[in-house]
Length: 107
Length: 107
DNA sequence: CGGTATCCCAAGCGATACTG
DNA sequence: CAGTATCGCTTGGGATACCG
Image (cartoon, rainbow over the protein chains, first blue to last red):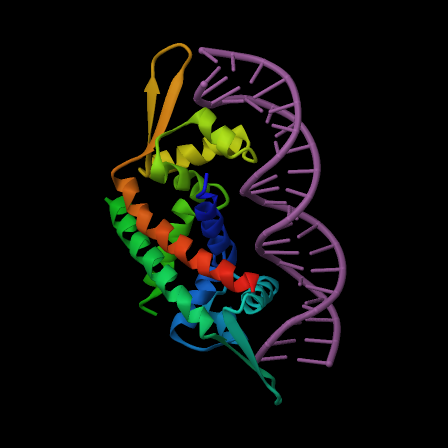
């Protein structure tokens, strides 16, 4: 099976940007820079622990960058890196498919 | 936020074809019809319980179909439905992204 | 062969409290 | 504001045994 590679790549993608919270986080970062507190407000169901964890993982994978302003009160901004922009395509396809699937399910 | 819809659609997609096992199952069904036992052989790490569960969910969502041959020994074949073919696009994009991400990570 | 049924465990996740 | 630390629980998933 030469295309173990195919499955491995799909799994890697899901591991990197899939899961319960990352897609949501990335959907926000698609359109604007976000602060920690904004995430909390926009995604009230997420706990701070999970938010921090997911942001750190995305940062580690080079998808997002974390900019700290040394001031009081503290301010931290999260944004997509240049590399992170490449997930737009993936997100868009998932959006498109999910949309038509919802229409189908709603019938 | 009018684009709650965007996030909802992405979440729906991930719920429907994401997770630990469905992408793998679907990768196989992309290229051929599969029997229950073939899945077990090709994906040794999956338990029968999980395999059955995931197949049932995909069937329920209209992505795959289950064809039972009334014979002894029993034979059941799983295949993508016509609707199920629409996930190719999603899988392909995830494959493509995962591939380049692996290259990046490997550096 | 192609499943169910049952029981059990661990990781992921949540709630809460605390801090630089 | 933007986190960390701790603890407890839920639930996805594994092991095993059995069935049509």
